[in-house]
Length: 278
Image (cartoon, rainbow, N blue to C red; front, top):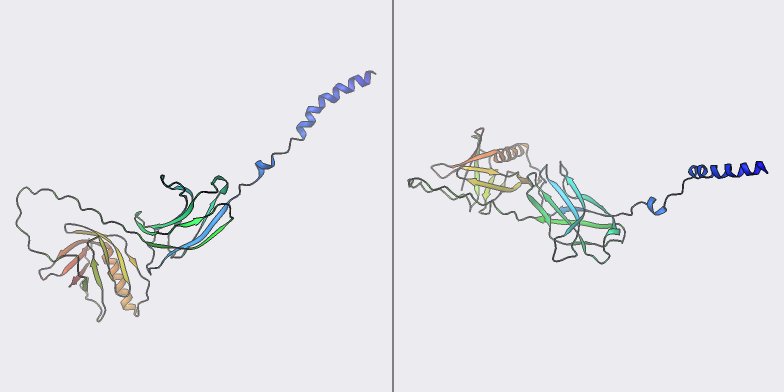
């Protein structure tokens, strides 16, 4: 009888220790991975214009259910442009469990330049239905963004009435035809032009390809944003070299002047020039 009485307490003492050796199984719901769905597609635009290195493509999935409130961003895919061209693929992963089944969700895409200026944007709503599994949207078409020209700074009141300056030809309006590139003329039968818009946009023909961009003018100081070019092949290497020189000088131009005969002279800080006439 004594042995039985001693054995029973000993068994009770070892029971808690045995429980620690076999911990309870974790909750199955806690171990379950978060279910995600993915929206895939690609973005492009119809114009034959090369993307500027340093630009950024941004694709977002947004909740636009409330008409009286801004859209809520759910997922974002941000792609740095280092040399690739359109079409650009994207993938948006999101958790559908947190979204309302009767909500309204759309995908939007933009391309901004190195300085953050909006170049391209979607103008069509691309709907997505959460809970339907992965979505293949296909190709999203972007259109040029209407970027307003910067407002000119107010001019300071002169202390005395200056003498009237001689009339200068208007910069905007008709296109200017480049007739000299840094004192070396241009290739016979080739053509390079510049057209300044009143809205702050600039475009033209570099020799083989068309270019477009923006400019700001302050007195005799002018500056251009990075120029976007089409991607045609030049028929001759000399023509390609001329085009590269035109775009290089134009991108670095800082001063604008008009010669006595009405010619437009654009010059860089290093003294390189482009001379054009109408």
